[in-house]
Length: 160
Figure 1 (cartoon, helix red, strand yellow):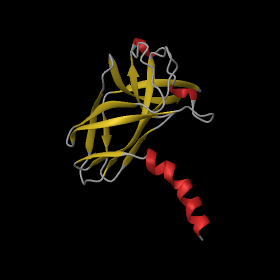
Figure 2 (cartoon, helix red, strand yellow):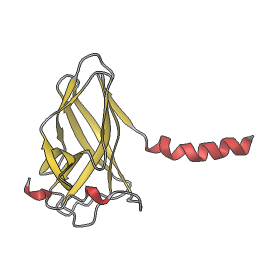
Figure 3 (tube, helix red, strand yellow):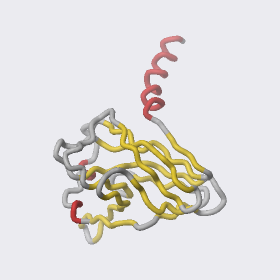
Figure 4 (cartoon, one colour):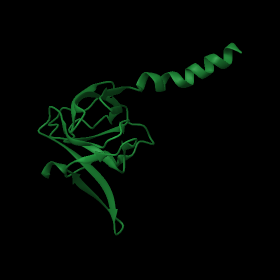
């Protein structure tokens, strides 16, 4: 029986160590993360989940970080062509969760100017909500794996 528990702990422990969340009022921000970038990358994408446990909607108004520009974007496909659109604000309905994930909503950190994201680092940021207020978070920088999408490279975003 002990080998089973050891194996189960071995499987679950990495998820527990990488899971992190931040909360203010009815809003919970779950596991903010970004993938490591190339040394001279100008942009990086951040991902997370926002959950509203309250009974009224709340709106994500902005994401702030120590970069020249930080924006919320949404990846879309129109007529078979992948596009990216700036998202001014994002309403989180009561009892709902919104995932910022590769191929969908994401936070764009622009103007890295040689400050590459390296695996194991943490990128501080602040999410600003209409009702929950300011929530300070840290994006864990994770190593890029073979199955990690390349869609977060976002070349050309420096012009936004």
